[in-house]
Amino acid sequence: MNVIVTGASRGIGREIVKGFARDGNHRIIAISRNNEKLETLKSEGEKLNPGSEVIPFSADITARGFTDKFLPVIENLGPVDVLVNNAGGLINKPFRELTEEDFGFLFDVNVKSVFRLTRLLYPRFSKSAHIINMGSMGGYQGSSKFPGLSLYSASKGAVAILTEAMAEEFKEDGITVNCLAVGAVQTEMLENAFPGYKAPLSSEEMASFIVDFAINGKKYFNGKILPVSVSTP
Ligand SMILES: NC(=O)c1ccc[n+]([C@@H]2O[C@H](COP(=O)([O-])OP(=O)(O)OC[C@H]3O[C@@H](n4cnc5c(N)ncnc54)[C@H](OP(=O)(O)O)[C@@H]3O)[C@@H](O)[C@H]2O)c1
Image (cartoon, rainbow, N blue to C red; front, side):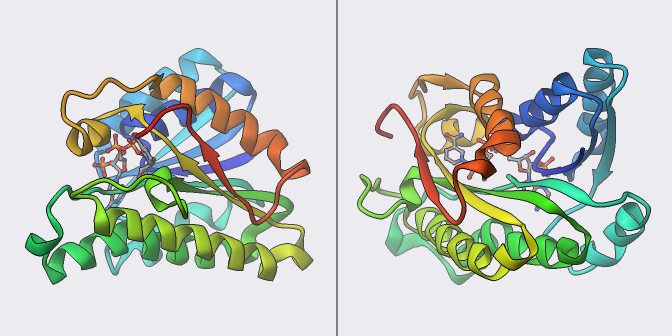
């Protein structure tokens, strides 16, 4: 399979890349800004399974030039089977202190990048592709909300509805789109959101579920926002 994972330098995304490498002889494009970490990930992934190929692509997915820079990488890739829109950012700040720049930052990285990359890849998806958008329990309607995370949660709410709309438009082409509204996972982002909190799941554990879901979940779900959480937060 051809797999693309954004936010691959650390946390859940990094483990998703390793999970795909372990799973089979897949070609995995790993995107983030940190080239050094991606190069290490390439070695780690290919050591886990020498039949897999990890292709590091270091870029800021919110940058204007992203599309032009990324096109040559995907030109000869062949059909894309899995896209995991995992890259994300978080700002933990009381509502009254939030700025328009904070709004722009969060919606650029959490929402616009999903739109931009998916639109770019649209003609290149295979007839049974699965797109997974990383949501959050904070962006799941009716879930507990937490002080400081208003714009982050709102951006993930936008990702959830975008998922439903994309699934509707893409179904004629056999492309499945789902949103995983993930609960607490022990990563740098969680430490920023809830300092000192110990999450019930590691990145490896969450990634193992996501890799399995990316491969098999499209048989059972399309256009769904699935809460993946055993805890609050
Ligand atoms: N951890 C949790 O408890 C939790 C809960 C709910 C949802 N989520 C969601 O799960 C996803 C992964 O979260 P995580 O906890 O693994 O986060 P993380 O450890 O902070 O990792 C975020 C990843 O996104 C990449 N990234 C951020 N901005 C980028 C940009 N402009 N261009 C390219 N890459 C960028 C980072 O790489 P570089 O810095 O190298 O670019 C990094 O690889 C996010 O969408 C997050 O919102 C996480």
